[in-house]
Structure formats: structure tokens, C-alpha cells
Image (tube, rainbow, N blue to C red; front, side, top):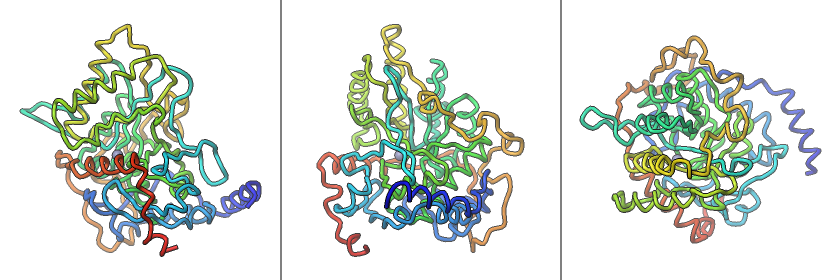
Length: 400
Ligand SMILES: [Zn+2]
């Protein structure tokens, strides 16, 4: 189809579609914090999801909506049909990114413009790790290290972790850090149905809104697992797909390690120190998912501090380096009802047709274990490096 025709169809569809309800209706309950499964089916019936899905179905061109899901294999691995991986720009297939806006989706964000700017991002939190009454190598201690250096960063949060540590979302936001969406369960997005993916975005968005009164416009696909279907749905929901710089490699690989030893930590910090040179601007990938990764992030900041005047880069959040607002509207002032009492319980409850959603969990303060995720990310990186990820696709091909 000609791009102009596609644009006209999209415009016409948008004109007749019901608006996307913003701010989102608060859900009747939050999904479980179990990251081993997609959001359960009954949570997809909440108006938070159904209204957004209806909008997506009315506005996203069918050629994107109809791209079949990949097959889930493990936390960071999906099996994608090899013959469509390039066509659909599946990122794990040769790190494919979309560099231009189209009628169906916005271009991916993969770097900051210009020279010598370091877009700082931390994924998978918030986490809390208290040892002898003190926060240690977790989101609060990373934030303290940033604040001591007067630095701001972008935190792409996982909703399931935010539900356990809602105060951390509010504190990071209040201190000027940017809070982006990293989905609720951290499932590979391409392995989800359209409804499941909408739910991943909307529940996480609702949680951020509940804690901050702001609606982000940046999301990061877990493990970089994204294709044109997911890009198009995210775009319809108002999001820019935000990856990280891969040329040169600006993934610290902190979450990929199976050996959480001091030697491995030091090795990663030493690698990141090689980034401390004048260069094209970039976006890094680090994590506050575990004491190991948060400790590395803090040690990297200590090295930046030690470099002093010799440090050639300016560190800043992604929205700032892009010179774009990070939130919709003014996005900096929490609205009245949600600014004062962020909690695991929604501030308002809408009527839900969900049959028996789980009750919102009380704040437990205990972070979700990251071992499976880290191992999964290791598997994924290995497979990407080996060029194997899209090599096996039989089941999915049958579904087409
Ligand atoms: Zn992640």
C-alpha cells in the first residue's frame, strides 16, 4: 500500500475512533507481581484495558495489528519466524531499529543527538534492599548517588516491582528523575497478544500516574523484544519506543551476568570506564534490578566522580537529551488526588467486569528476585550474538 494511502486510512480511522481515555481510568485491582506469567486474562477485562484496546483496534493499521505474536520461550527469549523478522523489524534480528516515523508508528529512540551526551537509563526497578537498617545497592541508594552528583536519570520501571515499592516511584519523580514504562511483567512483548500488550502498558502507566500524577510518553521494550506490531500499538497509546545505543555498545551487560562476583562487577565497571571519552552522544543501558546491578551503577557513578574535570560527557535523562517533554501535558506537577498518597491501592476505582481480580498487594518492600531475568537476558544476548534467535520458527510459521 502506498504510504499516502496508509496515512489517509489511519487518519480516517482516527477520526471515527473514540478517544483514548486520559488520564487512564484507574483499574479495579492491580495484576499480580508474578513475572513468570503474562497478566492474567481476567485483568484484560478491566475498562483500563478494554477502552485502550478499542482505541488501538480502531486506529492501528491492520497490517501491523495482524502481525502474529512470537512464541515465548523463556524470560528474555521468544521464537520469531525467521522469514518475517526483517520485514517486521524485529530488534533481536540484527538489532533492527526503525529510524523514521511512518503512518503506523514513531521511529525508535536509540541515542541522544549531538556529541558528548550520555543518556542515563536504569531498568527493571524499583527495588529496595535494606541491610542492617540501611538501603544498600538498590533504587534509593542509586538515587542518592545520583542526587549527590546533581544528576538526573530515566528509570524504566516494571509495574510488578513498582507495586511492591510505590514510594520509590514517587520519590524518584519528586527528585526530578524521569519515570518511563518498562511493562508490568517484563514479558517479551512480541510474544503477547494485542490485548495482553495493551494491558502491560496501561497497568504500568496507571501505576505511574497513581504515584506521580503524570503520564510518560516513553517506554522501553523488555530485552529489546519489539517488532512493528508492538511499535504501532505503543505509538497508538502515545509512546515512543526507547531502546539504547548498540553502535558502539552502550549496554553495560550488568543484567546478563550469571556470576555476581566482585570480580565480574569490577570487570563491568572497567568496561564502562572505556566509555569515558569524547564521542557521539549515546543512551546507556544499566539496571537497578538487584544489589549486583545497582552496585555496579553506583560504582560507575563513583568513577565518574573520580574522573572529575577530566570527565568529558554530560549525563542526563533521555527526555532531556532529546529536548522533548517526558510526560504528556506539563508533566511536572502531580495532580491533586494522586500527588499526595501514592500507594498500592488505586486512588479511584472504576467499575470493572473482571471476574475475580486479585486484591492489590500490600507494600512488602521485598524486591522480586532477578535471577531468572538475568539468566534470561544472558541467554538472549548470547543468542543475538550468535545470530540464532530467529533461526527456529516452526511453530509460529504454522500459526500464520
Ligand atoms: Zn528490563
